[in-house]
Image 1 (cartoon, rainbow, N blue to C red):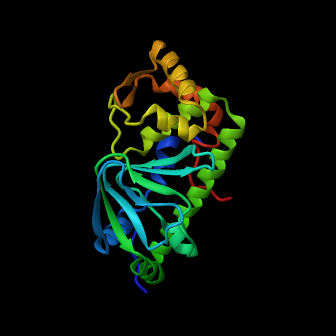
Image 2 (image 1 turned 30 degrees about the vertical axis):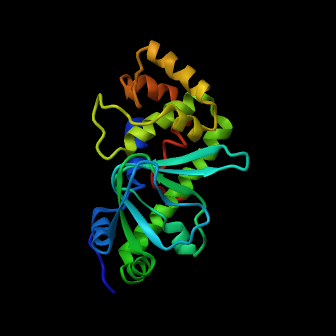
Length: 245
């Protein structure tokens, strides 16, 4: 078989580390890219819909993709916004079941596509690929459990601050003072609250100098104070780093 070579953290380090763990190792990504083809999506164009067959693994090359699910009442819950460098769709492939969410492009995007047969062959023949996806699925489970704790136990300011810092950490190359591209509608859908509630809290933080609201996004100014707001979820949702269970 082939083989690929390969606390005292601040909250910012924990958030960045948690985001990084949802990315595959560079050598595994390179191998996947070598066995992929590319598709381009226009803004709001669907990549796949809930209930579709698991026929491929996907990786964001350019742009951003929204992962969401709709309730019976028509309300949309945004599960995640995927930036370049993130791979997804492995769970349905591994268990051979239909997709359980919708995925569409937030903006013009390019996606790497690894066909199902190639994915299964790589997992079977390369132990490090197998382990990388095992770890990725485990991190997603920890993130989901932390999200449940977040929704049930934490007040909106802590949840919103945590979400902003996590989205910033997930960006491909976050730069100080750079606009965080996310709409208030998407933030509300991620948190399961109304847009008005999100807007009210963001406006309060803007008055206090923590951030600025920009067209199509948010600029974070005072991360230490936002980290204080998120402190209620720092030990769970922010801390998705690997550790023995």
